[in-house]
Length: 141
Image (cartoon, rainbow, N blue to C red; front, top):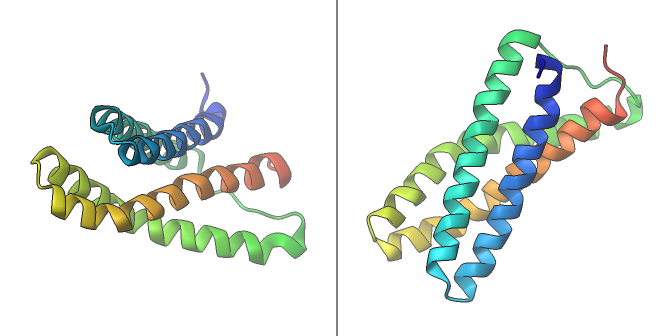
């Protein structure tokens, strides 16, 4: 594997995280707590691996720029801005939500998860969208 392969791997990890988040929501709504826990911890692992890969890639590969189509650039930047801001917010939210779940503080966990889940899902899905826009639509290098 080369450094140029990391964006695709990171997009796959974001996709896996989104899939596990969606499955975890279905599982808890069906009362399947163990399956829910496994899905959510899996999403946490996938997101953690994504973050490590993302930081490594950008520390070594530098900056990426969305250039074409030019008319779409403001939309891309809007997606990127919301993704980046919410990605910073989601880290402590996920950690706190998992903390309360593992401590069996269900009421606090549920209250926090109502905010954590949609933000985490948005960040995971927009991460894949950003990858597609940057590496599959806008010409690079």
